[in-house]
Length: 279
Image 1 (cartoon, one colour):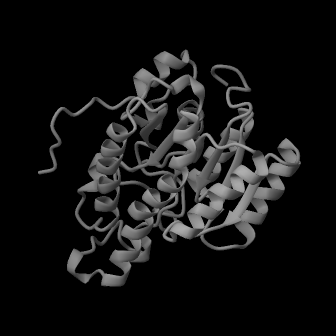
Image 2: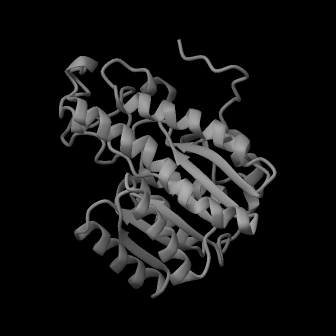
Protein backbone atom coordinates (compact mmCIF):
# COMPACT_ATOMS: atom_id res chain seq x y z
CA UNK A 1 0.00 0.00 0.00
CA UNK A 2 1.16 3.54 -0.76
CA UNK A 3 2.98 5.12 2.11
CA UNK A 4 3.58 1.81 3.86
CA UNK A 5 1.26 -0.83 5.23
CA UNK A 6 1.04 0.86 8.64
CA UNK A 7 -0.01 4.34 7.52
CA UNK A 8 -2.86 4.31 10.06
CA UNK A 9 -1.08 2.69 12.98
CA UNK A 10 -2.49 4.04 16.26
CA UNK A 11 -5.29 5.88 14.42
CA UNK A 12 -8.95 5.11 15.07
CA UNK A 13 -11.80 5.67 12.63
CA UNK A 14 -15.57 5.30 12.69
CA UNK A 15 -17.13 4.02 9.46
CA UNK A 16 -20.90 4.29 9.40
CA UNK A 17 -22.71 1.70 7.31
CA UNK A 18 -19.55 -0.39 7.59
CA UNK A 19 -21.07 -3.86 7.42
CA UNK A 20 -21.38 -4.04 3.65
CA UNK A 21 -20.69 -2.34 0.34
CA UNK A 22 -18.48 0.73 0.23
CA UNK A 23 -18.37 0.92 4.03
CA UNK A 24 -17.00 -2.57 4.44
CA UNK A 25 -14.46 -2.02 1.66
CA UNK A 26 -13.17 1.11 3.36
CA UNK A 27 -13.15 -0.51 6.81
CA UNK A 28 -11.13 -3.44 5.46
CA UNK A 29 -8.61 -1.05 3.89
CA UNK A 30 -8.26 0.92 7.12
CA UNK A 31 -7.60 -2.27 9.08
CA UNK A 32 -5.01 -3.41 6.52
CA UNK A 33 -3.26 -0.04 6.95
CA UNK A 34 -2.90 -0.61 10.69
CA UNK A 35 -5.92 1.32 11.87
CA UNK A 36 -8.52 0.38 14.43
CA UNK A 37 -12.08 0.72 13.28
CA UNK A 38 -15.59 1.10 14.64
CA UNK A 39 -18.22 0.05 12.10
CA UNK A 40 -21.89 0.79 12.55
CA UNK A 41 -25.11 -0.47 11.06
CA UNK A 42 -28.67 0.62 11.73
CA UNK A 43 -29.80 -2.96 12.22
CA UNK A 44 -28.08 -5.71 14.16
CA UNK A 45 -27.68 -8.99 12.36
CA UNK A 46 -25.52 -11.16 10.18
CA UNK A 47 -23.66 -8.39 8.37
CA UNK A 48 -22.14 -6.77 11.45
CA UNK A 49 -21.47 -10.16 13.02
CA UNK A 50 -19.74 -11.39 9.87
CA UNK A 51 -17.63 -8.23 9.67
CA UNK A 52 -16.53 -8.59 13.29
CA UNK A 53 -15.71 -12.29 12.86
CA UNK A 54 -13.75 -11.60 9.68
CA UNK A 55 -11.75 -8.81 11.32
CA UNK A 56 -10.87 -10.97 14.34
CA UNK A 57 -9.75 -13.84 12.12
CA UNK A 58 -7.81 -11.67 9.68
CA UNK A 59 -6.31 -8.92 11.84
CA UNK A 60 -6.55 -10.28 15.36
CA UNK A 61 -8.73 -9.28 18.31
CA UNK A 62 -9.29 -5.70 19.48
CA UNK A 63 -8.93 -4.13 16.05
CA UNK A 64 -12.59 -3.72 15.11
CA UNK A 65 -15.72 -2.90 17.07
CA UNK A 66 -19.11 -3.47 15.39
CA UNK A 67 -22.05 -1.53 16.82
CA UNK A 68 -25.73 -1.29 16.05
CA UNK A 69 -26.46 2.43 15.76
CA UNK A 70 -28.85 4.58 13.77
CA UNK A 71 -27.19 7.76 12.49
CA UNK A 72 -30.54 9.55 12.40
CA UNK A 73 -30.51 9.45 16.21
CA UNK A 74 -28.04 11.90 17.77
CA UNK A 75 -27.93 9.83 20.97
CA UNK A 76 -26.78 6.79 18.98
CA UNK A 77 -24.00 8.84 17.37
CA UNK A 78 -22.84 10.10 20.77
CA UNK A 79 -22.84 6.50 22.00
CA UNK A 80 -20.64 5.40 19.07
CA UNK A 81 -18.08 8.12 19.80
CA UNK A 82 -18.04 7.20 23.49
CA UNK A 83 -17.62 3.51 22.63
CA UNK A 84 -14.70 4.23 20.31
CA UNK A 85 -12.93 6.21 23.03
CA UNK A 86 -13.67 3.58 25.66
CA UNK A 87 -12.53 0.60 23.56
CA UNK A 88 -9.57 2.11 21.74
CA UNK A 89 -8.70 5.18 23.82
CA UNK A 90 -8.68 7.42 20.77
CA UNK A 91 -10.63 8.73 17.80
CA UNK A 92 -9.17 10.42 14.74
CA UNK A 93 -11.64 10.08 11.87
CA UNK A 94 -15.27 9.67 10.88
CA UNK A 95 -16.26 8.31 7.48
CA UNK A 96 -19.91 9.20 6.90
CA UNK A 97 -20.89 6.37 4.59
CA UNK A 98 -24.28 5.24 5.92
CA UNK A 99 -26.95 5.92 3.33
CA UNK A 100 -30.07 4.70 1.60
CA UNK A 101 -30.86 4.99 -2.06
CA UNK A 102 -33.67 4.90 -4.59
CA UNK A 103 -34.51 1.25 -3.98
CA UNK A 104 -36.56 2.49 -1.05
CA UNK A 105 -38.72 4.21 -3.64
CA UNK A 106 -38.74 1.69 -6.49
CA UNK A 107 -36.89 -1.46 -7.53
CA UNK A 108 -37.14 -0.27 -11.15
CA UNK A 109 -35.71 3.21 -10.70
CA UNK A 110 -32.77 2.53 -13.05
CA UNK A 111 -35.11 1.79 -15.97
CA UNK A 112 -38.31 3.63 -15.01
CA UNK A 113 -37.56 7.14 -13.69
CA UNK A 114 -39.57 8.01 -10.59
CA UNK A 115 -41.43 11.37 -10.71
CA UNK A 116 -40.69 13.23 -7.51
CA UNK A 117 -44.37 13.81 -6.68
CA UNK A 118 -44.97 10.05 -6.53
CA UNK A 119 -42.38 9.54 -3.79
CA UNK A 120 -44.13 8.91 -0.45
CA UNK A 121 -43.33 11.83 1.88
CA UNK A 122 -42.12 9.49 4.62
CA UNK A 123 -39.68 7.84 2.17
CA UNK A 124 -38.39 11.21 1.01
CA UNK A 125 -37.87 12.25 4.62
CA UNK A 126 -36.13 8.99 5.56
CA UNK A 127 -33.57 9.16 2.74
CA UNK A 128 -32.82 12.79 3.52
CA UNK A 129 -32.57 12.02 7.22
CA UNK A 130 -30.06 9.21 6.78
CA UNK A 131 -27.95 10.63 3.96
CA UNK A 132 -27.71 14.25 5.11
CA UNK A 133 -28.82 14.60 8.72
CA UNK A 134 -27.09 11.36 9.67
CA UNK A 135 -23.74 12.71 8.50
CA UNK A 136 -24.32 15.88 10.50
CA UNK A 137 -25.24 13.91 13.62
CA UNK A 138 -22.15 11.72 13.45
CA UNK A 139 -19.73 14.52 12.64
CA UNK A 140 -21.18 16.79 15.32
CA UNK A 141 -20.86 14.05 17.93
CA UNK A 142 -17.17 13.57 17.12
CA UNK A 143 -16.17 17.21 16.78
CA UNK A 144 -15.62 18.11 20.46
CA UNK A 145 -13.02 15.35 20.80
CA UNK A 146 -11.39 16.05 17.42
CA UNK A 147 -11.17 19.78 18.13
CA UNK A 148 -9.71 19.22 21.60
CA UNK A 149 -6.86 17.14 20.20
CA UNK A 150 -6.45 19.40 17.12
CA UNK A 151 -6.38 16.36 14.86
CA UNK A 152 -9.34 14.91 13.03
CA UNK A 153 -10.74 13.86 9.69
CA UNK A 154 -14.33 13.97 8.50
CA UNK A 155 -14.84 12.14 5.19
CA UNK A 156 -18.29 12.39 3.62
CA UNK A 157 -19.18 9.79 0.98
CA UNK A 158 -20.98 11.28 -1.99
CA UNK A 159 -22.03 10.46 -5.54
CA UNK A 160 -21.32 11.68 -9.06
CA UNK A 161 -22.45 15.12 -10.20
CA UNK A 162 -24.76 13.62 -12.82
CA UNK A 163 -26.51 11.44 -10.24
CA UNK A 164 -27.30 14.47 -8.07
CA UNK A 165 -29.47 15.99 -10.78
CA UNK A 166 -30.49 12.94 -12.84
CA UNK A 167 -34.16 12.57 -13.69
CA UNK A 168 -35.89 10.11 -11.39
CA UNK A 169 -33.15 10.15 -8.74
CA UNK A 170 -34.82 12.41 -6.19
CA UNK A 171 -34.49 12.35 -3.23
CA UNK A 172 -31.20 10.37 -3.38
CA UNK A 173 -29.39 12.79 -5.71
CA UNK A 174 -30.48 15.94 -3.85
CA UNK A 175 -29.52 14.37 -0.52
CA UNK A 176 -25.94 13.96 -1.76
CA UNK A 177 -25.89 17.44 -3.25
CA UNK A 178 -26.90 18.70 0.17
CA UNK A 179 -24.14 16.67 1.79
CA UNK A 180 -21.54 18.20 -0.51
CA UNK A 181 -22.83 21.70 0.21
CA UNK A 182 -22.66 20.92 3.93
CA UNK A 183 -19.12 19.61 3.50
CA UNK A 184 -18.04 22.88 1.93
CA UNK A 185 -19.55 24.82 4.83
CA UNK A 186 -18.00 22.53 7.44
CA UNK A 187 -14.56 22.71 5.83
CA UNK A 188 -14.59 26.49 6.26
CA UNK A 189 -15.79 26.13 9.86
CA UNK A 190 -12.84 23.87 10.78
CA UNK A 191 -10.12 25.75 8.92
CA UNK A 192 -7.06 26.11 11.15
CA UNK A 193 -8.32 23.73 13.86
CA UNK A 194 -6.37 20.61 12.83
CA UNK A 195 -9.61 18.97 11.68
CA UNK A 196 -10.37 18.55 7.98
CA UNK A 197 -13.55 17.84 6.02
CA UNK A 198 -13.35 16.25 2.59
CA UNK A 199 -15.62 14.39 0.17
CA UNK A 200 -14.96 11.00 -1.44
CA UNK A 201 -17.05 9.30 -4.10
CA UNK A 202 -16.61 6.21 -6.28
CA UNK A 203 -16.93 8.04 -9.59
CA UNK A 204 -19.68 5.83 -10.99
CA UNK A 205 -22.12 3.16 -9.92
CA UNK A 206 -20.54 0.66 -7.54
CA UNK A 207 -21.47 -2.96 -7.06
CA UNK A 208 -23.48 -2.47 -3.88
CA UNK A 209 -27.04 -2.99 -2.70
CA UNK A 210 -27.96 0.58 -3.65
CA UNK A 211 -28.61 -0.91 -7.10
CA UNK A 212 -31.26 -3.54 -7.76
CA UNK A 213 -29.99 -7.10 -8.16
CA UNK A 214 -30.08 -8.92 -11.48
CA UNK A 215 -28.27 -9.09 -14.82
CA UNK A 216 -29.04 -5.44 -15.55
CA UNK A 217 -27.25 -4.15 -12.45
CA UNK A 218 -25.20 -1.40 -14.05
CA UNK A 219 -24.77 2.32 -13.70
CA UNK A 220 -26.15 4.85 -16.17
CA UNK A 221 -22.86 4.61 -18.10
CA UNK A 222 -23.13 0.82 -18.33
CA UNK A 223 -20.27 0.20 -15.91
CA UNK A 224 -20.07 -1.16 -12.38
CA UNK A 225 -17.19 -0.32 -10.05
CA UNK A 226 -15.60 -2.60 -7.44
CA UNK A 227 -16.19 -1.11 -3.96
CA UNK A 228 -12.52 -1.85 -3.18
CA UNK A 229 -11.50 1.23 -5.17
CA UNK A 230 -12.61 3.31 -2.18
CA UNK A 231 -9.91 1.80 0.05
CA UNK A 232 -6.70 3.63 -0.94
CA UNK A 233 -8.16 7.16 -0.94
CA UNK A 234 -10.06 6.47 2.29
CA UNK A 235 -6.84 5.40 4.00
CA UNK A 236 -5.03 8.52 2.85
CA UNK A 237 -7.89 10.86 3.78
CA UNK A 238 -8.03 9.47 7.34
CA UNK A 239 -4.26 9.48 7.81
CA UNK A 240 -1.87 12.13 9.09
CA UNK A 241 -0.58 12.44 5.51
CA UNK A 242 -3.67 14.41 4.45
CA UNK A 243 -3.52 16.97 7.26
CA UNK A 244 -3.06 19.90 4.87
CA UNK A 245 -6.00 18.94 2.63
CA UNK A 246 -9.36 20.46 3.54
CA UNK A 247 -12.53 21.16 1.61
CA UNK A 248 -11.64 18.96 -1.35
CA UNK A 249 -13.50 16.33 -3.36
CA UNK A 250 -11.87 13.08 -4.49
CA UNK A 251 -12.98 10.52 -7.07
CA UNK A 252 -11.86 7.01 -6.18
CA UNK A 253 -12.06 5.77 -9.77
CA UNK A 254 -9.29 8.22 -10.69
CA UNK A 255 -6.96 7.19 -7.84
CA UNK A 256 -3.85 5.46 -9.23
CA UNK A 257 -2.29 3.31 -6.52
CA UNK A 258 0.87 2.91 -8.59
CA UNK A 259 1.68 6.59 -8.11
CA UNK A 260 3.19 8.28 -5.04
CA UNK A 261 0.51 9.55 -2.65
CA UNK A 262 0.87 13.20 -3.65
CA UNK A 263 0.43 12.39 -7.33
CA UNK A 264 -2.40 9.92 -6.73
CA UNK A 265 -4.36 12.42 -4.66
CA UNK A 266 -3.83 15.19 -7.19
CA UNK A 267 -5.02 12.95 -10.01
CA UNK A 268 -8.17 11.97 -8.12
CA UNK A 269 -9.10 15.48 -7.01
CA UNK A 270 -12.10 17.17 -8.59
CA UNK A 271 -11.47 20.60 -10.01
CA UNK A 272 -12.54 23.23 -7.47
CA UNK A 273 -15.67 25.21 -8.30
CA UNK A 274 -15.25 28.93 -7.74
CA UNK A 275 -18.99 29.55 -7.75
CA UNK A 276 -21.53 26.77 -7.22
CA UNK A 277 -23.53 25.97 -10.33
CA UNK A 278 -26.67 23.90 -9.84
CA UNK A 279 -28.86 24.89 -12.82
